[in-house]
Length: 330
Ligand code: KG4
Ligand code: ZN
Image 1 (cartoon, protein in one colour):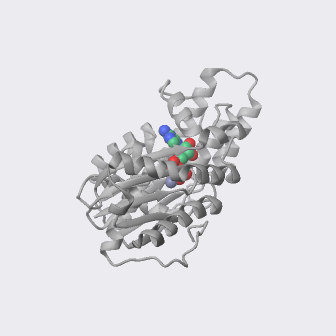
Image 2 (cartoon, helix red, strand yellow; image 1 turned 60 degrees about the horizontal axis):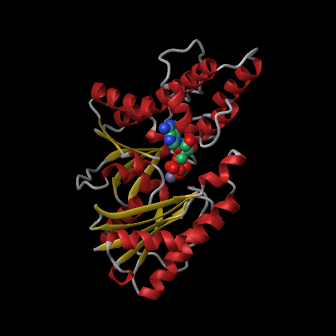
Image 3 (cartoon, helix red, strand yellow; image 1 turned 45 degrees about the vertical axis):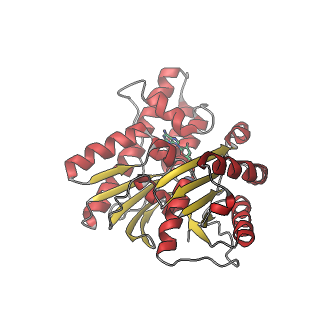
């Protein structure tokens, strides 16, 4: 069973061929991030035009790498929500056209759900129920997954996403876009900081709020008499520590609250080295098995879309051509 995955929800145009839901024959990604960096954030119109230009070559490259032809594909899986609506429409229209032309089924996939499963990619050890944590540029979500088609959101951000907070703080510090990897690298250069920032705890809930901490950092930076690389590193370190400690604590608390022993972690911010280390350490301490997605599957990719599509197809899910792109996850 060969599934072609297509992902165009944000600034990555991705295609992948996955066999039987777990063997990744190819995973190709073309990113338009370099076109957005001078603006300090994603420009939706530029992202969708890039998808339009790259969707064909990226898909052809994925098929070539997998050594398969379009006619060999049994199923097409494509992200239809959430994301930038213009970007989603490119992938969704492309997938529907392929499905129609090849007379093969297609399935629209929820991008967040796919991130929840990316830690299981290349393995066959799906074990339900588990708690999924997705931390990315657009989303911060905790979910209870009891099956491929039974994913219930139990906590999410009430304002900025975790990656968005990283990107905004990096901008305040003049580090450029995308900010997450740059803050990660800078924070690694020191092991303590005189600064302290705080996030709203939203005690008793599994929700997050990250907009306050960004303002806290902004006011601190505005008051600085001088700016040095060390001060930047100290601010990056203190910001990262606060935000990551909170995410790790809430994710482990979610496992405890629902008596779950498995935590699956995905999304771009899951590349963060301090987050990975914190989750693994706390997992050992609290007896939760923490499954971290490989960095290449943390970021947006089509292999996770194809894999979830395969298992949903096995459960009987099919999408109609009337399915449309939906920008929000509500
Ligand atoms: O999952 P992703 O590729 O796209 C979305 O679906 O949003 O995530 C991109 C986000 C960006 O905000 C980026 O700054 C952040 O992930 N990111 C990181 C790291 N690598 C990427 N944040 C913190 N530490 C990192 N190492
Ligand atoms: Zn994503």
